[in-house]
Structure formats: C-alpha cells, structure tokens
Image 1 (tube, rainbow, N blue to C red):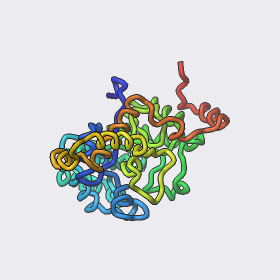
Image 2: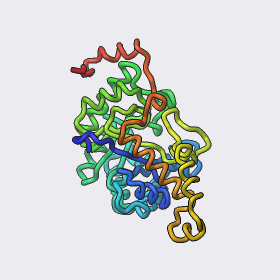
Image 3: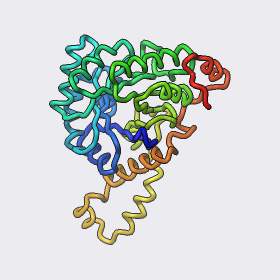
Image 4: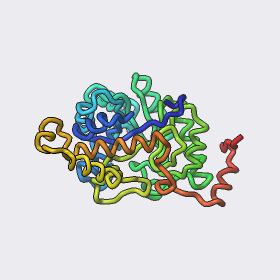
Length: 301
C-alpha cells in the first residue's frame, strides 16, 4: 500500500462488537489501544491500564475481527523495566490474544526493547510525537514538532526506531509539515493521528469517530455520525417490516450506523479528504521557516 500510494486506514477497537463492525467495514488495521482504559474502563488517563486488561481487550477484538491485522498496545510498565520483560509481555499479545504486532511509545530510549522484541519474531510499531504514557515529561498534552529542537529530536528518535527494526511508525499531534518531513526521512510507513494527511495512513479513536466518549475530544478527532445518520434514517424508513429485517440481518440499529460511520472514515482517508485543515494542527510561517533550516529538512524539487 505504501508503494502504491494507497492510504492505510487504522482504527481502535477494544471489544468483540466494535472490532467486528470495523472488519465488516473493511478497515485495514485495528489498534487495541491503551486508550481502552479511558473509554472502556473509565480511567482518567492511560497509565493505570494493566497487561491483563490489555490482553482481555485484545482477545475480544481478535474474536470480533479474525481476518484483520491487529496491533496490541503495550501499556505503561510492560516494557520499560528490561528487554526480557518487554519480550515476555509482547509474546503475551501474540500467544494469548492473537495480535499480529505490538505498539510501544518512545524513541531511542526503547531501541533495545524494539530490537529484543523483533528478534523474538514479533512485529513492532513505534509511537512518537505526543505519547500519552509519558506526556508529563514534556509538559502535558501538547502539540509536538513545532520547534526545531522538538522536530529534530522526534526525527532522530524516528531514525533510531527504524534502525532498531520497527515495521511502522505512528506520529501523534504534530503539524503536517514536520510530520511529512519525518516520513520523507524514513523508509517505513509513517501513519498519523492528528499529524496531517501527507502520511502513509491515519489512525482514529473509535469512540471519537462515534461520539461515544463524553470527557473530551481532541482537536484532530472527527465524529462521523452526523454525516451518516440521515442515510440510516432514510434506509430504515424505507423498510416495510423493520422487525423482520432486524431479526434477519441485525442491521436495524447501532451496528448499522457504526459500520457506515467507519466506512465513511475509510472513504475519506483513501481519498485524502481526511484529515483536512479543520482537523489538523497549524504552524505559523515564522516557525515553519525556522524548521526549514534544519539539516534534516528535505527540500521539494
């Protein structure tokens, strides 16, 4: 897909029903994110999430989406202590939950973990930019890559992860221009969540896409329900026997709406409509000019 220039679509799912809907919508990948601790378990942050909780959610997602590429998210405390513990926990995602890959946060500081996990035969997805597990270390939930220091540190970390063996990289909460530059400096697919549309693909939190999480919604997140609800109402209104239709298909309620919303997201990502400027972080001209002085900045031909 990277070679062909086809954007990759990625969504979170933490249970059987949501994962099944995502697979029926023909999503490319599913992430069982530690965000499930917030949107499913009610934690205030992702930090309290345990390995056992992640394995349970990952098992449920795999049962719902047996034919979709699933990435299990390594929670805080599951990989920082040692390479051995990191490999043990990564293996749990593969053996117990049937995940195809794992994701972990951090750059050069976790390069030995990445090497150890990949040497164990497990695919690793990196995660840089705004990394929620360690957000307090850089001042909370803030947009990354706007200064030359932040941009170059992220790029150096990206290169370290690629050299360590990650198969993909996720960039979170970053203006489009520096995110695109990081992708240009790497050979692996770079996907984004709140990092503009000039990347190999997009990730979205399912509960944001569906408007299911009431605590907050990131600037870059789009709820797709408003643009599919009218279609659903029109279709269900045209059915003569709704009860029979529901019994025969189970497509008379929320499941139908969820699938249509995910399909709409897929269409917009594939056609490079989402994320547009409304769902992307901007950078002012002066800051962009400073970034362009970086030795890593690849000038357009």
